[in-house]
Length: 154
Image 1: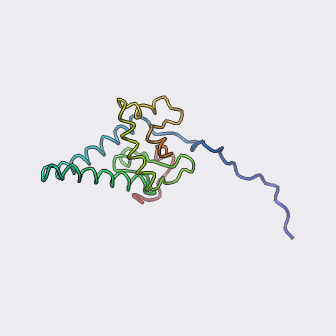
Image 2: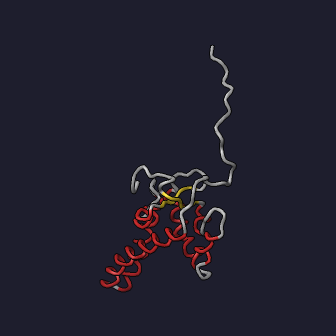
Image 3: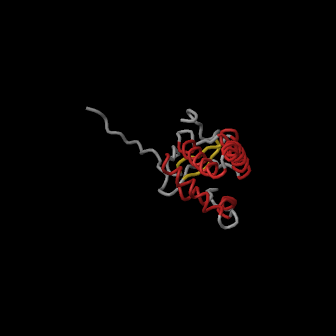
């Protein structure tokens, strides 16, 4: 016969609160976005040079695929985020956001940009350092050092 266990269950954070560690800074996120923008701009520029109407469509599809696949992967990192040592994680669990929510995050970038980039700047005064598109996808961007990546890109 076994003895009953009198240990308390492990602490579970209240619903609606994110991981308790640090958040990625505005500067790191901005530089990561610039790196990704340059990379996508070069690739898109090649297609644009070949065929202007088709180039726009191809660039859009490449951008959607790039951001959705890499941010939705277990690493949560694009090339720019990897270079800056930051990653996207689920706000509640700290895990991957998956491809569906990564796509929602991509759509949310347009909403963040519409009112004079207010949605991007929102993280400067938000308690959880989230942009609007982070909030839409229920994610948060964190330093890789605080939330290590097991594999890249996933």
